Length: 143
Image (cartoon, rainbow, N blue to C red):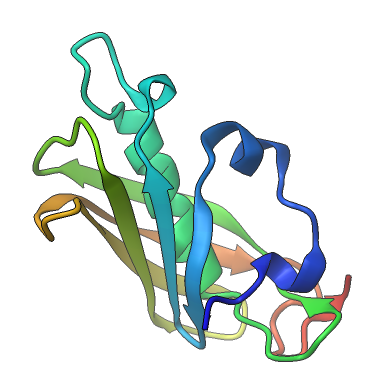
């Protein structure tokens, strides 16, 4: 069952701008979906690399911040992000699958893969993220 974004926290302005949605969310894993529109494409008519980098960054961040406690939230900030582009997409729905890989009490390491509608890998990346104060524990902080 899809998890409502942050248990009722309104979407960020950037999420509204891009139009991605959180399709799956569980401990150590997050899946974002984005239906490609004209606004996501570069001059060549393919999804802009900045959109793909955003999906990698965001799916990684969500994978590290699942909070099973209603009315509470966890947050991270990106310290470092790498991206590799392996394909192109002009239309359809993209799926960014983020997974938390390792980490300690303050710094975590995550990776993400972006698949097109046919399941072809079009981008991948990884990053390191630091928990914001209070977000280190699974119970997070109040909304």
